[in-house]
Structure formats: C-alpha cells, structure tokens
Length: 323
Image 1 (cartoon, rainbow, N blue to C red):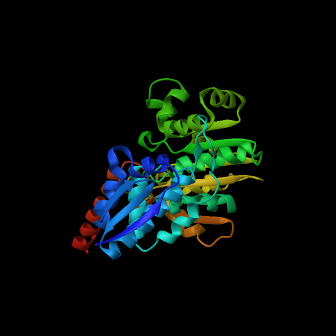
Image 2: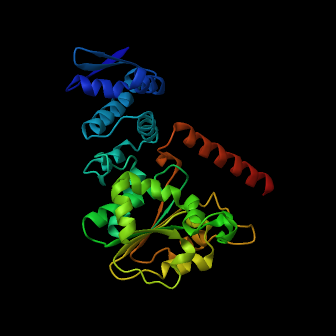
Image 3: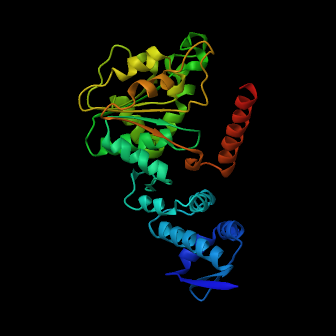
C-alpha cells in the first residue's frame, strides 16, 4: 500500500471536493479503487501506487476547477474521471480562464466541458457555427449566452431566436389562441435561456423594444438581418429549403449559430433534414465551423449520458442486424 498527500488551502475546498454526503469523493474512490481521507488540512490518497497516481491527477484537476470558481457537481466529477480514463486529462487545462457572461442572478456562466469550451471559441472566431450533438450538451444555452455577451459588448444591436414548429407542420392555425399563444410552446426553451441571462424585467423590456425577437422559422422569410446575433434551434427539423432560406438571411455585422441533434429528427420519413444536408454543403467554407458535441459533453443528470449511450449502442446493433 502506498499513499499520496495533497495540501489543501482551506476547509471550503475540502467540502467542495468531497461533495454532498461525500458523493464526489465516493465516486473517485470507486473509480480508482483507492481510499481518500481528509485530515489536518491535507487530502490523503491510499491504495495501489498506479491507482494513486491516476486518482491524484483527477483530484488536483478538481481542486483547480474549484479554485477557478466552477462548482464540483456529480457531473463534473464524472466528466473529469472519464477524461482521465481516456488519457485526455491534459485537455481539461482548456477550461481555465474567464467565464462567458453573468446571468441575471450574478452567477458566472462557464463552459463545463472541453467540448463546450471549443464550441464557445468557435462562436467567437466564426461568423456561422453549426453546433451538433445530443440533448443536454448546452448547445442552445451557450449560444444564447454568447448572443447576450455580444449584445452587452455592443457588437450586435439585436438578438433573434427561432426554431421550426415541426409538430404542427408550421401550420399553426389549428392551435388555440393568438399567434403568440400558438408559437410559445415551441419557443419556450429559448425564453427560458433568455430569462436566465437577462431576468424577466429586462427580457420583457427588450422584447417590447424589438431588441429581442423570438419567432417561428417561417417568419424569417424575406428578411435581411443586419447587426444581429441569430440562433436557429432544433435545426434537425428544418427542410433543405428552410435552412437555406435561413442561412441567406445573414446581413452585415451579424453572426449565426445553428443548433440541432441529428438523432432526433421529427420530420416525416420522406423528407430530408436540412441540417444533415447543410453539414455536407457547408463543410470547409471559411468563416463557417461545424462543431460536434459527444455524450461526454452532456451536463444534465448523469442518467442522460447513460441513456444516450444506451440508445447509441441499441441503434448500432440494429444497423448491424439489418446490414
């Protein structure tokens, strides 16, 4: 048996590392088959020498993340140990640095995975970004955060968010209420992200002034969008014609982010997804970047990641059996 001692700056860091009911440290102990104890201002890791070395890397990264202001949730610990097992723990250094923006509650919003950080960097460096990946990876939320950041820095004058209303086939007349009532269910995730960033009062004021616009995709036709940050959400449910129409709305000093999950296409089987086609058509064009998230970038409940992996495995099996 060997042991390794890691000094800790304060008790708060120890509490953050161990987590609620020692949940974080229990995961590390289970992952690396080591014992981790806190005593007299130090963390002591006990076990096999090789396992201790791996556990130490994970613990030191987590302490560094905590010192940088990142909360050490169960998902964070799971992500760090996963990256370590893949031999990619050095990539976590990319998560250092400033946050993206402040939420209405004063919380600093940060990229929580390397994939998220590279997505944010892609949005900074390109005019159009396609963010493609599974549910829970923060595709839409981070795009809204970058839109808010650009607006606050006066790089754009307007934020426009849109998504296709596929379930109603874009024929909203069958739903009860006025136009806003009809489209609200489809746009709710975008509203929620904006509420987080601006707060309800500022959001309502910006909506009233037309600074923020949230509308179904059909209402983008025939417009040229200058000095705007434009986000198309759920783009896997656009047709080829719709996504081409959207892309050609780009005006001067504007930026676009297109998000979608190509494993959740709700279009009729006879129609092709515009997002799938756009990935092929736009690949390699300067100023356009296609960013792909993986299941490792899922930041929702840990079961979401497990569910995505299970479905991927199931679908791979079906393809082999039908092949």
